Image 1: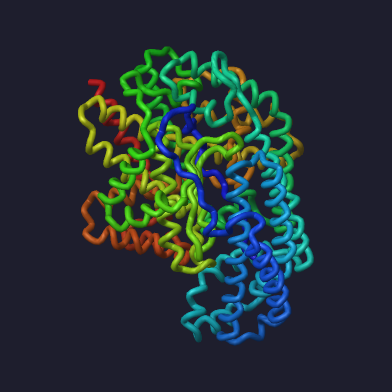
Image 2: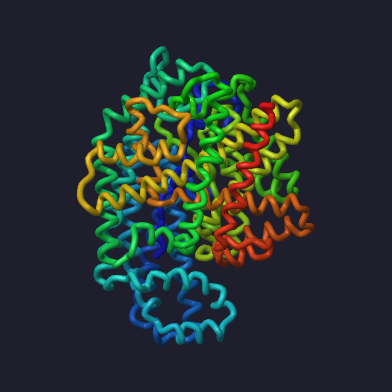
Length: 611
């Protein structure tokens, strides 16, 4: 059975939220397309159906996969897919409802109980992957060759069989499946509930949650930014032992499972799930690190001069420029900005995005207890995606809306592939989101009223790209160091702090000084807890989109058609197949330099404006 994760807040928060304000009528989720209420009779019905379907599946197929003909194998995988939809609908509803109010004990209990029941029922399906992976390649190839409908599922089989070298005994695999709801998932919930429950009170401010405090780091007033940074450091420091315990436990749990599976590196599992070769990720990582001096180091030196400072402090990283117009962007304006940008690319793209605003598919407001960050969760192909934001009227919030709607459009288009083939590896899942941001940025840039407005837009985009590429690769290096160090034993909070600081100065550059307390800022990044090594997918997606956008700007007459075909493919094709129509190849080491050159080009333009 495929994993049924909770929706994970995507992208580093990067201070994307703000304080209270009048943004218009912010939409809330209507989850009734999944279930009307937690006590809806349909939930009990689906749980009963799921239990029966899992037991029936095991009775019909366990020990018998090797004897199936092609028609029998097709029936088997379609039965498996139907179970996936049932379980996915249940867990999506419970997870989304929980993320709306993570501090609510009833919602947490409902989620945990549902997760345990689904885990118990789907334990009967663990044999499926194990037996599939024991089939000889020749036997599976023969089955696929004789049935075109079955051949559609080849990518599913390939991803499944990529785990063959790391497969454990049937008994151990069933144990790990059973244990999952009280293993990493439980530590994830502890992290989420702790983070959502933290409150901060910077000097001169009212008590506020994490998102609103992070937002103060984008305020024009430098003392307010400093007060927020120091308060974040104080609260993170007060809780650092708990966060160190969570990271130590999860890293050790992963190390144990990786060791039993004989995985060569801690990153191997993520690369396999992303269907990407380790050498491609390594080439990306090396290209970005080599580019630090011409990207982040160079940009932040410019920003230091713009702000008139001898050195930048961490609370200056996301500070607005002195010439930036301070205004709150209402929800209606944000919506129209993104839809116009999407329509300028292709009216179909805007038409797919429109229902998100009309039908309760977006939850936008900042509320006490709500999960921080933003995400788009695909739920199941029989329903539709849901987008979560913490919208508070900043220009970056508009870009986050464009980003998450890009995910949503991608998920809608890929749904035609069916439940097992719609899921896109993380590396490709970021393509449509980053492309949506780029379309919105270019639309705004084309409409810039003067040189000053253009400079502000360019600087904002460079900062977002640095946050998406440089910062995420620094995160990836931190995780690599953390998991490597944990293999040698428990890491103290000071030890984790030191690993964090070892990548910060290298990535941000000599323009920065680092206040006491910044060493604990690793503690609030949810990706390290929820999805180890997820973060390189952002850099992958940004580099890929930069290369794609260059093809678009060159005037490829069929670009829109090819782009939609790529999104519709979902997880049915490898990145090589998807990029080939555009003349691109991510396995070429020079590919990443092309993407990074777009960021460098924007910085060139900003430097030229200084003349």
